[in-house]
Length: 281
Image 1 (spheres, rainbow, N blue to C red):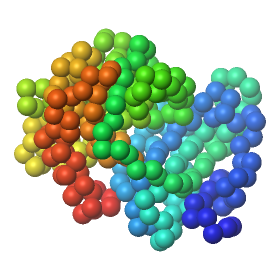
Image 2: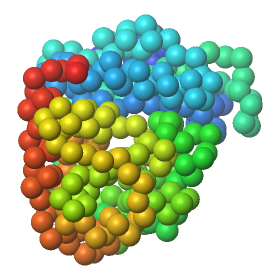
Image 3: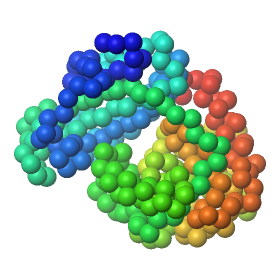
């Protein structure tokens, strides 16, 4: 291994970061049959790891993939070290080698755990609503799978219009989520976020923020509302495991009047304080 602080662990072994570790017939590569988690590493510790592993298990169960949590923890222990800070931890589990096609084979799952750099997010994000929808009734709705082609296309659409994140409605036309984020917005002075039944991912930052805001006496509603409602808000923000709370500056080129507004600032401050108190809340 080199002095590079980032490491890669695959199926029980540390391997060079540039090693060829995936077979051409791996089901994760062939058909996107896999699940993953992205976490933040702070001072050699993985933030909210218990919750991330719980969601990993739920996503894997939704796809019918067996998860060896002990093996995943071994991989995390191998790649996360004391000197690692402000880094990304990526856990990926795929269906493993299989015939070319949708059917799985008999081989064990491929399990990879890797660390890498984590970039800083700007204070404000510009977003664009995309013309495609999330299917809240899909077999994979709410699961964190490696099938991200929809997100790639949507994010490219947003980037071409000067935005840094794309926003989906679902098939009912209700606000759903971003390509890698959950959404919160203001309505009549109250924070609102789409419910999980919208088809959005059960984000870990979303989950923690809802718990902490409500414990702090802040009213937050989980309500299904049309995508146009997002455009009527005075402020809105994104949440994710790498960005925490990030204010939205514009939507489809139109600025939010209060960005970053008081509700956004309150949420960001509370999340930062509570996250600093407990690495595994």
